[in-house]
Length: 189
Ligand SMILES: [Zn+2]
Image (cartoon, rainbow, N blue to C red; front, top):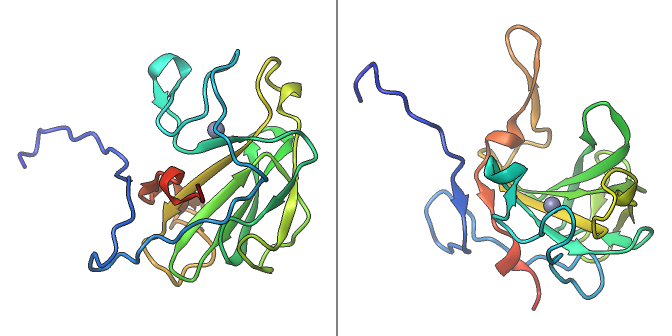
């Protein structure tokens, strides 16, 4: 590569389970986090399939939206450890996500969930109640309420926290550098 060449770093997407690929554990089936999972169809704010257009095409949807009414119990999609209770939007203390990391390094963020678990808690796929679905229409009138599910593969399966401090003391979220996984084919049909 020549020194003047500008390379746009695309986030790699893992579309399908790839059993046996060296250095990459096979992707597991996910447990359904909400009853009768159905992808959010088009509404006033967009649609919920993986890769859907966002912000007028400036970015794509890197997760899936499963239709769920506010208050719906959310079960963990994978077994592992609660690695982070985060905020979905900077400056908005209301909307939360629950991040679970599996021993394989697979990381799932369950968005718009009022947490009922604590950080570092062990959780079981399809069994542990992570929290309840939050009402997104408060922020986006006309949107179909849903659980946003996002999956990525951590580079280091041993990592239990994906936020690190750099030499200047700034916190970096390594999660955003991990390859994105389309969770659609991993959900129970
Ligand atoms: Zn979404």
